[in-house]
Length: 430
Image (cartoon, rainbow, N blue to C red):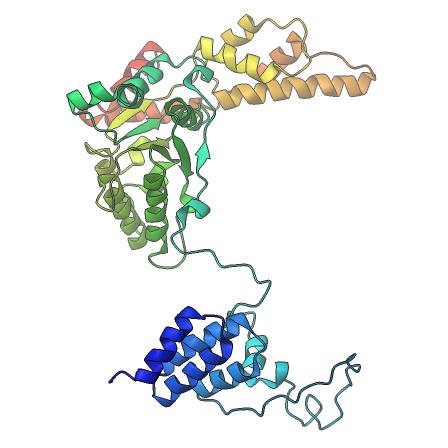
């Protein structure tokens, strides 16, 4: 189609005066006459966005969409409006008459009738703006962690491994450059539930002064085909834009389950997308530190543990005696206590996870509060409350240890779980 000089001139003038509605509608009319309906609809849409009640714009839109042109509305004289009258039988909206429309606009009436299932054509004043596709920083929370490794009690072996993998190279850029150490990489934390894997990930981000993004399966999965992969990509893009950033994949076995055991093609595709993101095929992962956590590493696809992905595996065990003491002190610090012998409680809670210890303190506080309610006299949390709580709250790590024992005995290919084997032998569980 040959260019129209008049349309080109009007378009240039409209660029300089975008709020000139008569000029925009005149241009839209010429575009319709020239058979360029798509461009005309775009111009009319911008006019309606600026003035939703414009009668000429609505008439042009109906013409562009193939509808009949309604007569222009009769101007209403200034002054107070008369009260709305009930429609007469046989008139508009009455029995046997046509349905009343919003502003005598058939398209507006259909839009109003189907508002529950069809979104409106144009935004109205006061409407909430739709989220911008791809704006991952609004979809996912990018946090600043205030936790440091010093806030994590015990776990000296885990802290040393994290220092070698992430923190040391970051603090020594000259040595990192000399040894060719990249700032990209991944590490998988595994162990019984409730032992502080998420807390450790936040502590690493705080120690590095890096941003922190946490991801779970519910942040990714979508019912529409392709949206789950897009959500995962947008999350990695948010981490890349905020580098240095710790990207924490919680319950990574749900995202990256063994593909040989997955019956859903969509989940296999999602696993492939995760592999591509970890490889950096979809972007540069320099400065993105991927920390993953799982209670069942034996269910994670072996491809995720290939060098260059989640190639380092760290066992996070139930807290040792030093860590248990720190956790108990933390959860009792703001509660009224008297005569507490932490040494005895620490010795009686060897298999307890951090979550179990928090529940233990909560249960002891409940016992003391219930006793105060019955007696009518407020008393402190005492040793007897904690000892009673130890008898009631059982460690949640023992079922996991039973499963881990079978894995260590029969599925330790390549020595992946050597740390777990050594721990079970020390505990005489193997």
